[in-house]
Image 1 (cartoon, protein in one colour):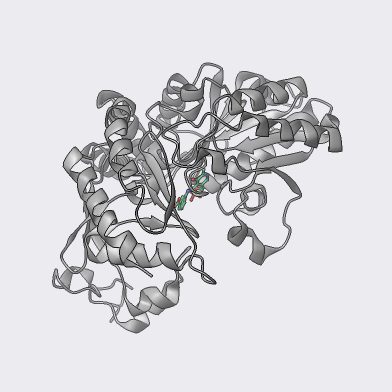
Image 2 (cartoon, helix red, strand yellow):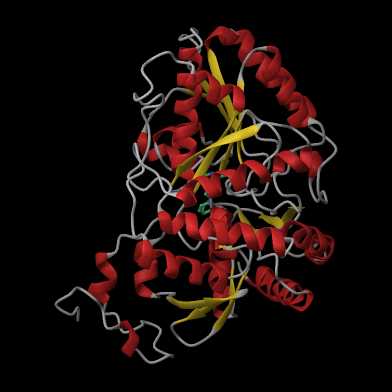
Length: 457
Ligand code: PXG
C-alpha cells in the first residue's frame, strides 16, 4: 500500500522478497521503458542496491553487472566521491535557472570537458540525456548552416543499426528497425549501410575490411547534392546496434568526404565517451576529430542524468557572430534542467575519478583479457559471431526460426537466475562491464555464458 505521501514502504521489505514489497497493482502503475512490461510484471527483476560491479536484487542476491547499468556506470557503482558531491550540492543549491543565469559548477564542468575532449572541441551545451544530446546536435547543425547563409543545407544522414536515443531526431537518424517502425516517418533522413560484414566475423578489435562503405556518403552527395546536406551523425562504434566496430580507415574516409563537401560530422559518443574503447573517446582512438561530439552516460557515471554536446570553435563563433543584440539567445534551445547543479556536481566528481583512477587506461589494460576469454566461446551452439573493442563486446546468435529475439531473451533470463545481468537485443547479447572488473569476474561471465548459451532451444 502507498502511504499518504505516495511513498511505498520499500525499506520494510525483507531482503529476500523478490517483489520488494510491491503488489501486482503497484507494479502495473509504472509503464517501464524499453521493457516487456507483461513478462516483467509476472516475474519481476527488482534491484535495490548497487556497489562496484554488482547489482543487489530484491531477492537478496548479488548480480554481476555485465553492462555497467546501461553502459553508464563504467567506473563502478556506488562511488562515494559522487554521492558525497551530490549530497553536499543539494543542500547548497538545489536548482539554479540555466537561462540568462548560471552557476559556477556548470562553467567548471564545461572547462573540464573542453580539456578532456580532443583539441578544437571547445564549447559545451548541456542536456539531460543522450537522446537530448542527439536532437540538440542536429538542431545545432541545421542552425549553423542557416547562420552561414546556406539555409538549404538541411538534410541529415545517419547509419543503419545506429542508435541516437529516442527523441524525434534521434529516432529518425537511428537505424534500428524496431525502434522506428511504430512511429512512421518523423524527420526525413538518409542512412549509410551498417559496417557489419560477414567477412569480419570473429574479428578481434578493429576489423580490417570494409572502409569502402564510407564511399556511400559520396553516393548520397551525388544523389542529393552537397548543397542540401547539413550533417552526418554516427557512433564511432555502434553500441546498441550490436557493438559494431568500424573497419580500419572507415571513419577517416567519412571525415575526408565531409570535409570535401562541407558536411558537419557529429560523433555520438554517448556510449564510447570516457574510456569504453580503451581510449578516452572514439575520436581519440581512431584519430578523427568530429565537428560535434555528443556525450552522456559515463559523464556522471550514471548517477544523475546528464548529456552534453561539445561543439567546435567554428560552430560556436558562428552563433556568437550572428549580429543580433547581445541579450538575445544566439541558439534558442535549452532545457529547464540543462546544467542542473546536481548533475554538474556528479559530473565533476566523475571526471575526477576518470582522471585520477586512469579509467581509460584501466579499460585498455583489461581489454585483451576480456577479448581472449570471450573469443573462447567461439564454436558454441547458436553463436555466429563475436565482436569486441575495449571493454565492449557482442555475441551474435543464430535467430530462432520465426521468433528472432527469443534466444537472446531466454539466455539473458537464465543468466539473471545464475547471478549475471546480461543485455539482450534482437539478435545479440551485449557486454560492457565496469572498467573496474577483475579477471576472475570476466572468467565468471564467460563460464556462465558457456553453460547457458547452448542450453536454450
Ligand atoms: N546515443 C547513443 C550512442 C546511445 O548509446 C543514446 C544516444 C541515448 O541516450 P539516453 O540517455 O537518452 O538513453 C544512447 C543510449 C543498450 C542501450 O542496451 C544503450 C543505450 C540506452 C539503452 C540501452 O545498448 N544507449
